[in-house]
Length: 628
Image (cartoon, rainbow, N blue to C red; front, side, top):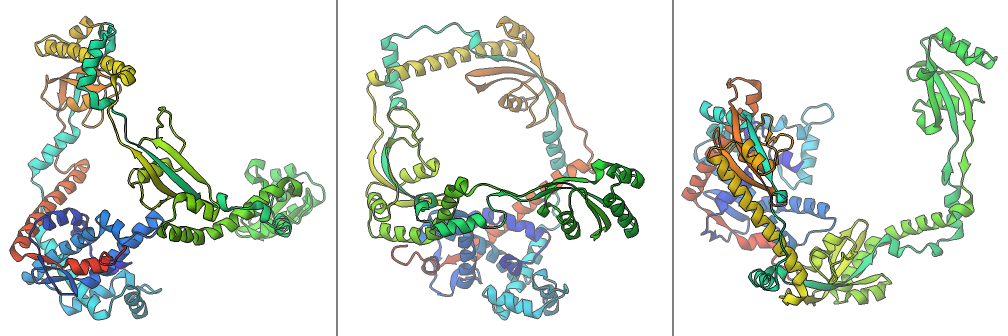
């Protein structure tokens, strides 16, 4: 709603908003700001201010959205860490640059046109679709505007829109650009290729100790033990808080006796026939109740059983109340005629399955657990706040566990990837999130909370083992494996380079492939980004890096390499008005307009200058307050 109030713009101007962030970096990447002291402004571009009120309003909206995504309020320090204040400032300064340029060039909107623009804003429409003064006033109050400020904001927005349309409206990419992009997107190629892999090299002999030690010395950093951390966690969850034994017997009995609980409701096998004549429906119902076979009625009405049978259903499955009332009041094989939503309905019941309830003794424990969990969910918010207060007071994870009777776990020396010192994966709840926190904090830091569904886990680092070199004797097996893999890669590469050279020198791909015991393959024609079946993606991309006859060697994974040759190039037809080229045309037009706008605004910023007020910004964000 706030954006609808602030903008209300259409056309190419709306597209420009997409590039504000890019534009912002171009503008604010220039150093040498002059710090200003006006407490009502956070920045000024030329003669156009960015008000503290606007900054506060947009910043708070962005912070609220982030808090909702994170599931907890974002602190000023966290907002600063992810660059939120600067992002908001960048976007507002970018808008101010456009407004300043518009005003300097005399772009403005008349009062009558501006009033009409506001009246036509759908955000202010009442139930009748017309402008509603009451709705306008309410939205002004809800979003912190007075009428005069909002009108000026709309005047600036209109000037900005007209100026942007004047700068980039009608910009069209030259036809050669479109032709080049058409060639890039729609040209197809065919390649002949084969794969060089470890089946084409001799067996690798076991290395001697000197070879391994030399390899170890050269790659010692690869065999270091990773940094490991020990940390403790305490978990607050509904499951940890739930105390089924404390749920009263009366509460359990009430839950059991609730309608439809712990069992299945009554079900009935129902048939319904919608007819155009109520008298006909009543006649058919009377006949059925007198013992006439349902098949005979279906035949007389020219209906099939499959078309009228609703199956075995509970009452809630029947959306027409009249049909539901009749179906669940009839006896087996009884029928009735009712006025349904879509006309007269013949309703028949062919089977009744009574409601069934599981024995109380069977579900008592289940009920206790459910009621205990409901109570625990109600307690969670208060307890999370209490634990946070304890953490702020210096309580350790172990002390929190004792004080609030919560489960504490200690994770001993795991790597960032979650492996223990024995190399086995360690079972850690909310593993990635908890490990990220454990490897971000330091010993002595307060416990940090992370979310895991309904649970909150506090993580506290106990100790750190720094990464360290390991002696050769301890990692000899790892060194042997790494040397063997490196040797395999080197030998495959040598064979692949030799094969590629032969193709470049004129031998056919088929001949070279056969020489190495492989079979050459010929692809179907394919375009950029759409590799044919069997050809690895890196190889298909390489096929477009040269002209017809282009030869290439491409690594594709597991040390395998593809030798390929482009054997066919098919140029696409080009018709400037073709429907499939219009999307490319629009993208090129927008790109050129964006480049033109960025260039103009960068030049305008250098001409008129920009200032900012960090003191006011920090005050609004909350970074001027201790403990933020």
